[in-house]
Image 1 (cartoon, rainbow, N blue to C red):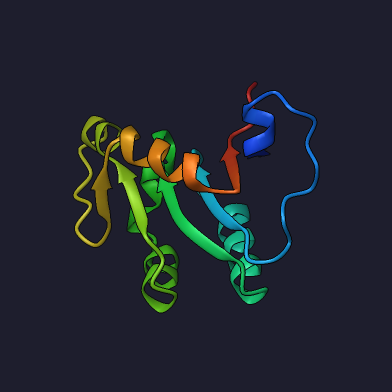
Image 2: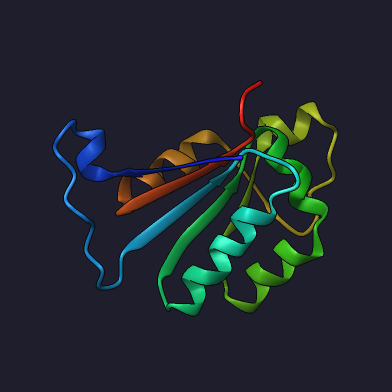
Length: 124
């Protein structure tokens, strides 16, 4: 499991100062299945009252659409949970309880966020 964080400063190539600890806006990109570490990370952010702008399931991450844990988390916290349209289509997934979105949606949310946290399977 690999987790990475990207801040606006690092995207611009600047030296990264810690992002504002007062109400940072966070986007979570999940590229692995199962995604328990990403789920626990989201729970910990929400417990600290940190706003998650969205969780975007991409690649193998779309397999988490069948998880009642993710669905309940999204419902309880009014958390936008998106599944990548192309990834879901490639896996023939019926994403009935999760919104389908394209990479443009992810990019728009990521560019507005203070932090983007990426969870993906470690490469072999």
